[in-house]
Length: 447
Image 1 (cartoon, rainbow, N blue to C red):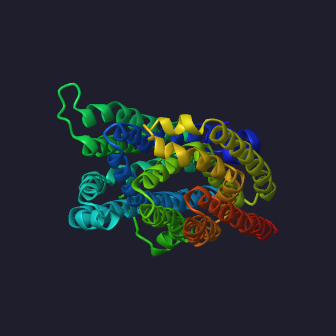
Image 2: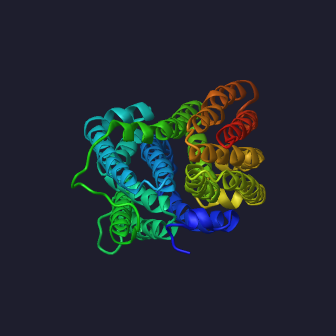
Image 3: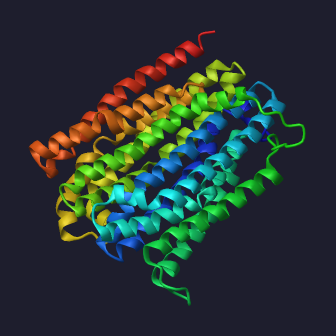
């Protein structure tokens, strides 16, 4: 069974799992960028860790634009391949490349012109501002690596090749892990660069991953090829990409706005609270990465079979996807419940952070089953060409409910009980997304 037809012929459960496994591993590796940075930065000082946590809101916004565009492109390519429209898929891939290059240029200009202003907005204290500026300016100016890496990976995923997608991520992540201590602490003759060194190590890893992903597509992608000769730009392709991609961008960007808003609320409590939230968010992302890998694998499986009108396979994908995700969620909950102190200690947590951080991790972890189901419902709907469900559910769970509830709970119940706001937000998002995704599936597969 070759790679071109396995999306149609392989049984759904093994297809989804074999595609998801490399994605899960690659996303876990990708999350090491921020985990490793934070672990080493924490050894500099808690102030440096706080700065990295504050800057993460801007990094997350940049990732949101890249991932959202790539999700829209992935969904379009999978449907075009399922419809046997290979030439149209190649044209869309070329359009996607131009979109990614344009996006990179925009963020580079933002980094060159506005890094100081953004740092001042993120942090009130001069020392924090300077650390934020050092870390942020490098990540923005040299952002093309993360955008092109994401683009190259999604082209491979659209034809079912998640292994080479994983390899490109491994190359970047391993290089980042090696360079982090060397550049932060000045080892092996390298000058000591502190938090700026962590940012430089990250962008070098991203650039290496981008080069690998693009080369793999050039040499190994059996279906999709970027073609400049005879290329015709069509706004229809852009509209198709962003029909799914824009809601995904907005949904991902909500995470950036949520992080910024929560950080501003927590700055009123203490800088340690900000540092803790940054640590929690990265730990949670790391433990949730297998779920995101599963969801990303579901997009081409759902999209291809929907495009080829194999509706029973679309329904079977749903029946495999959600229960599998729940199992991963329960595993994540168990880790947070049993090992909260050990997790925080990885980041040189102070006694103050441990005092409220340990119970906070346990409180939040109860919501993982709801969060995972919400996330997977969004990915499944995106595979059907509907990105709005993903966007709305993300807005509910990360912004519209969570932020005001957290603010109210901190003011009325104190920091120790404020984390129950996650319970309200995640349950509300789950109730919406599950019903909306099932309704979308019934509508699209009724024929």
